[in-house]
Length: 262
Image (cartoon, rainbow, N blue to C red; front, side, top):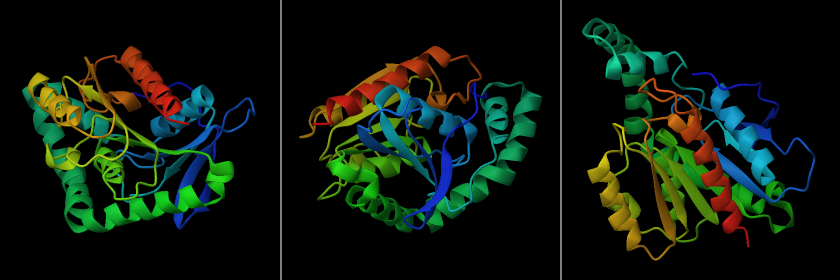
């Protein structure tokens, strides 16, 4: 599961949230700002921070990973439990189910039931502050990248009356209602969907997403990958090696942001 390397960015308090911030390693000029709405493993997940570093280097971006979860994130060990539950033996499924009950269920209740409305507001407020703050100096474009749990909140930005972002990239989003969450997109959205995703995958559901966004007033794209949930942060729940797909999705995001920088 772990990515190669060590995150090189810094941490700070930004607009009221702890945040990881990284920029191009070669010191070149910043071309835009990417704010990551992380998955359930949160802003400290090493794979997410390394992905932020990759975005910074490949696109010339200042990348920010805020703690939208308020310190209540799933431990990285949950990935192995999920892999055991979805693809292991009967015994493995049983043990994994126990661990998931102890970690995943409390997370879901807290964030998806108790904080869902307030989180949408928190995400929108943070993005608005960034788009009007020094992070976007010189009128730099601001983009959103949402993964898994964070995908729904990144999509909510694209549906705001006055979106604080120029474009959005969403990878294997969860808890997304189709067509409702996709019906009012006002800025371009690029989707990286996994065919083996238990959340929003499979040919039928992906085709439904394509149908809905195809009618959107905003320019959108949908790319399908032979992978499972969380492959973009190199934590594919199927346990398969999907490094090549993760690399391709990185490029997809960077090219999408680059094409909407003007």
